[in-house]
Image (cartoon, rainbow, N blue to C red; front, side, top):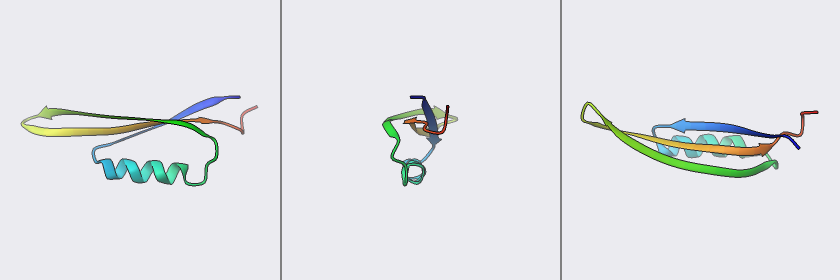
Length: 62
């Protein structure tokens, strides 16, 4: 079994949600999804990062 990952990172949580849902829509090989948020201030503006890592089994590798 070969495991792979796919990483998504967006400034808006809805964009992340849409991207992850689109990616896993017809997949039956997803093992786990890890989710993380972070934020920081740049020039007085709050910047947010919403990220997810999808761990999946790659059936096409030999």
